[in-house]
Amino acid sequence: MRYHKIPDETIRRLPVYLRGAIHLSRQGVESTSSEHLAGFLGVKSWQMRKDFSYFGDFGTPGVGYHLESLIRHINRILRLDAGHRAALVGAGNLGAALLAFPGFGTYGFEIAAAFDIDKRKIGRKRSGVVIEDVARLRSLRKRKIYLGIVAVPGGAAQDVADALVKAGVTGMLNFSPRYIAVPRRVKVITIDIAMDLARLPYYVPAG
Amino acid sequence: MRYHKIPDETIRRLPVYLRGAIHLSRQGVESTSSEHLAGFLGVKSWQMRKDFSYFGDFGTPGVGYHLESLIRHINRILRLDAGHRAALVGAGNLGAALLAFPGFGTYGFEIAAAFDIDKRKIGRKRSGVVIEDVARLRSLRKRKIYLGIVAVPGGAAQDVADALVKAGVTGMLNFSPRYIAVPRRVKVITIDIAMDLARLPYYVPAG
DNA sequence: GTTTGTGAATAGTTTCACAGCA
DNA sequence: TGCTGTGAAACTATTCACAAAC
Image (cartoon, rainbow over all chains, first blue to last red; front, top):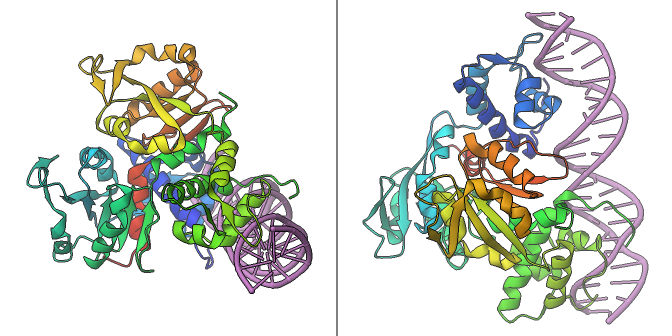
């Protein structure tokens, strides 16, 4: 292994590999080949091996990958090993679904705080989390929460993002259908559900 | 404009441009430059112009783009102009949020049917849609619904996808954390929310 | 014999810089 | 003069094929 800038696409795929490794491991599998794991995940085996090669030797030639150690490696690279707490802003339909969502635990995430602007929701509990007034976002710095999930309507997204940045948040998952401007040190990943649906008709033969 | 295979990345960005054009148009803007529209969306102006160039002349040199005509063009390319009806499978937390989600309308989508396996949910209405028994999925062919939204737990995802394919569905939005195997003619776009969150810590300085 | 790790070849995408049109 | 549309250059990512490791 030599020095290489790691491709963004490789980083995007690492959680896929991690998900597969965790899944097989839970089923009692101890070791597996790149061929098998990649097939299970719908990727190419050489793509997976190439991706791993940027970080060193994960497997054993002639044998394959030891899942437990693979999981440890990927968790370390993605900095998931310490666990992370995130703050949700917006406790509407989508926010409530995210609070109840079991998948975050797989990667060591916990939604540790939730905020809304609606007085009727503030003080109530959803999925074990008390909903706080959005005005109290600044408390995140003291609580050492530096990941935010933006689940508010588009019109409020930039204001919420600004408040999160002010509160010390350095990474955001944005579910609003808006581009969010942030300082360079802050990373925003946008999930625009309707937009993803919108490119489906292009690919399917006239319905 | 010459012949070119259209890059997948271009197709991925077209809905972004469409969203921006619709947004500005609703605000009363009639025409705009690539510089302005791109800045609003957080992309580069030459990227946008290059993307458009694969499909012909959208704008007027010295003037810019007429939004209404730009919207029409992109809608045509993405085959959104006719409108589309989609079937939702899984009326849990996420499914209910999707049923209530206002964003689909922007691109001419409507969730026209919803299915669940839980007898207690079947027959009830959510956001104006009656939840049907998942056993009735096969009726989709007759109803001319060929887009599916998979919002079931991972363990059920492949079975649901198989049933959707059998019912004539050719495009799916998959919210389950699983790779779904389908015939080549069917297109699956997977949105794995936890996975997207999982690559955030890699990019942000140690929290 | 099997499977990994990777240099080299190929393919795809972004970026630039500017000719040409309004 | 202002802005689009696009070839060509630069960059990034995928794919292949096989030597080395077990």
